[in-house]
Image (cartoon, one colour):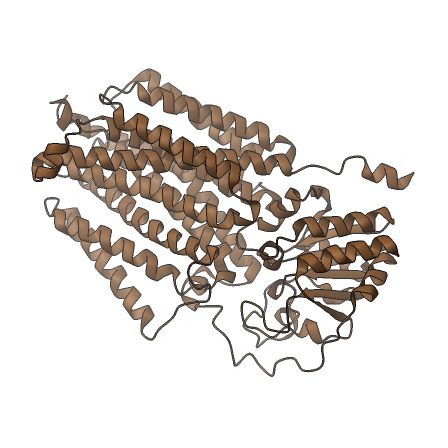
Length: 126
Length: 466
């Protein structure tokens, strides 16, 4: 388990599988999203934003894979790399989490407001 | 050796299965958004998928240090919750632009971190995906921040243009693409790679500053698309399918919205991005002539009170005046008198797709009273009073009648076909695009000057007295 694990995207079969996933997801996305009515376009944007906050799973691994060492960070050079990467991972975890939490939270807050006409029409007809 | 290991996920069947389930839940969640009744349930599914994916990842074998992760998760949750609770609906466009920036920052940083640790061992394909990820990520970051600044009013909303701007932009873009191409074949040249990141940040700024506020719905959708595609590219770099799926869904959603918004303005994406629309057009034909007729509050209230059918047409002015509740109060007063009230919503009214619908829903307007442009136009001829609240270009008859108009061919809400029109307007000036609007001079039109919110609440009072 040294450098060959980087082969996950080098392996042509894995690459081809990833392209299949991309093409099918694009097709599926087109089908599903073109059915969303203009009424809900703002919640849609907010929801897809929250969903793409899934990049958090990549950020988590980066923020937690290496040891952070303040002295090495300040010393610079090659030794400072893992600490820099950890900091980048931390910022990425932070921004992605903000997107996930605020994206889903706001989507729900908006969707709660959309309601049908309740009862008023009957009152008028009477 | 752990530290030098590539971060791509090694086969871990439980985690992969969790990701698969989460991906399916995401798709179901978006499918729920096809109707307001199923939307919330759909989102609960997507939230469940997200929670499962995040918790599953915390058990990932490469994660050995939890301090920074926990700090990031807690801080992010606090800030995110604050946004979710306190951001007012009128500020949704700014908030959305900011979240595009945040998503793009995360994708760009993951890419830069991967490059920093592993650029020696990456395959050509991984390097290309990484380059795309970082370019899209950096330009979306600064582009979205500029868009957010314009929407918040921190940066001037009118287009910022100068001579040779397009050549300069082209130069920046080509340099960035050059760095990308060079770093594909010279993986050790990290300076070139970091130069590409810097050019990406610069390009994002240059791309958005020449675009006027009125074109924000298209820009927001495009940045949405870039942020998503950047996440998808991250998925290719890490060999992670859920990132590819979620990023692609986000990217395509933004892409579809951009096309819809462009159609609603009868313009191409290139025209929006490079046209610098919203600069004051002095050569917009002869311009409408004549006098605007002013109407008093009392007269307007009487006209509304004795109408059979009233259609409200809101625009961005509704958001700036925070007048959504006042509209609702007036509509209530009218409905109590038996007047039929509908709302005509133009796709690009406001500053982001669906902006007006959310504002009116916040003011408790039932969504079956919100009519899309194509559904409200056939009803215009039978409408007694059309009330235009802070909208301008989307009701400009020049788009239909004057082939020389800069907005010629843009579909509009045809309020001028109604029996009478009342336009609520701050003053006599032109709208955001600087175009003259002949609607204001038509014989059916009366102008009611003043702040939309106070005019509407006074109208509601008067209608109750009639």
